[in-house]
Image 1: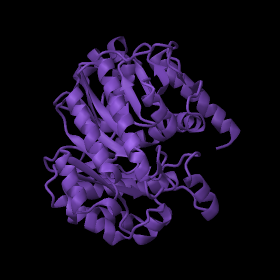
Image 2: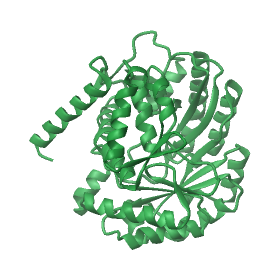
Image 3: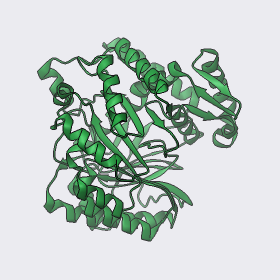
Image 4: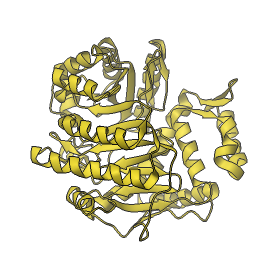
Length: 432
């Protein structure tokens, strides 16, 4: 994209944001004001970030550090202290789901268990506990510890069952390792097993993708989450691409792969449950993102509160120091103005591919008519259909286009904020 294209894209983005949300919304993450505290909450979700990794995948943008057993104990103490800080701040809220990501959380399951114990002591946990893991880190002891921690939903980051694609992604294991891990998890009595698979990889064919889907299903996956290779300038995939002359897939390739994934899943009885996700049967849906609100524990963890977003410092040592000193690890905050919270809710309902029309007035207030106008336009374009149970559902083409919007808006915002937050433990401000 040249400079003129960048300028036009920025102007279009500003115009859309101003039209939808209004002029009062400041699109800036900045240090929270002195004495800032989150609002009291009756219910929310919780995200626990475990930053330890043995193998750094070049495409991964998340906060991570090399696994070092000596760092697990200080991490655990700091995470427990942060749980206490949030409990004191928001009250003994109901926690409707717990999501544990990383990094590779299963590298530090004793730590995870200790933090979960404190979460249950300070909050009312009523929802499922969900965790990510890596094929190379799954064995019988891992399964036992997950059950001991009352984990119900597990996501296995397979990405591909083809050796050449795993090598390109820097995954560090061969297909039989992923197959063994998935089979073990599937036979171990968890409520749902999700498998992450990537499509539109360099040199990947539609046949490769559908073969991966079939293999995951044969081995017991109850949900399939498929997504293309996202890149961020601050992640090492940029360096990898320069070294290997790998280009990102074009729109036509992504569209063709997505269409065939959708067709294959429909033929095999998998129901679309998000832009990327498909599940089979009555198992609980596994989702890493579609919570209406959550508090974040750990370095680089974010929180979605009724009045805005906050982000912890990304620097591990700075996060540890903040918790030791008894102060908040929140480094950046973007406050909500007007109906920003409602529009964010609608964004995630589009991600879910189902928008409950009866909720628009309550969530969006005076902006509800504007939202209805946009939804009617989406219907008229053939990107959605209205269902009898009072909701609009995206069609297969309609489900694909939020992916492009996510690339342009959400991932661009992530890239901007994450780049600065990785450079400075306590940035002054970041405009998006």
